[in-house]
Image 1 (tube, rainbow, N blue to C red):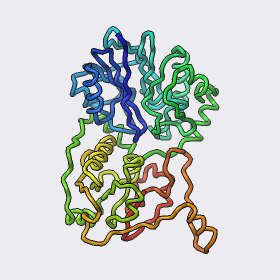
Image 2: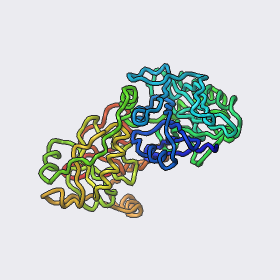
Image 3: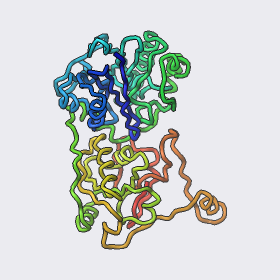
Image 4: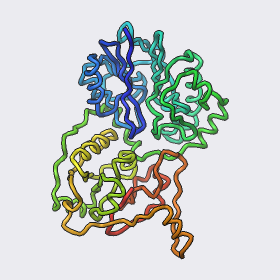
Length: 417
């Protein structure tokens, strides 16, 4: 039988899950919270999911592994050393899991992203490595998500884990990481935009395999940048065994309810593009457009536990935003409204000034008006600081984004990303 590997991508978070099958049965690696996508892929392939494998207790999203295993009756494989509150099939370094005669998977301890991180090698004529947050395309998973006290130690573990993989696997082994496609779980020093890679290619281009240990560790530690504030909540949720999210439509809010929620200083989030928002929006609302990294930046700035109401042009926009938020543990919007902003308020709409770069340059050089220059953070995938939401209340104190200090409060106006 031919082994098929299907990547289930979540580009908004920079992650991939994998469905691997032999035409009859399948295993899944690192599924996202909205497991319906994996189930749809399995149904289209006509296969039954019998095993769910976690590479680590994730820090950047809420896992769907526990829910998927319960839905399908699959074995849920989690490192035996992970402190979790649910029953699972414990797996350790060197264990071989036989899903079927064609699907034999060996677990390898690869600490570095976390202390208990595992990678999985699909054995056979066409080997594949599911490396989670260990060896990535041109990079490695960052070692600082467990706190500064363990960062240096984990950086050294990451180096040795990557070397172990490279030393024991043939060059033609396909590399299939979970992180590294725009995820903040990657080290700041590296990263690659290729669509696919192998162990042989990584030997040539990946700093962890081309540098000595001291140079690699120094570069990684020097390049670490801030990461989203909501990360601190992800590992505890995952260790508790998160249930499948309720993606049913939230309650519709009328003008009076929207006004009441604004007065209560809840977050009303306008999902439209920033240019449309700037042209007219309900005063006091925030703009996190679905055309950007919506969940990442809303989750970064939103004080954890604050009720969120979603405002979209269509119910489809609201549903998309709700799915994105469920992936980072914001399960149920407080309310929602769709349509035009004139329908959401009894008062006049607010606007934000807009200008082209040429116009800004003309103002800067041709008048006495001082234009504050905001520079792009070092990591190239992030939007410009001027595109961030301006928060009414302070962001969570842990890991504020570097551009948060430039935010300005605008009384009576909206806030645009």
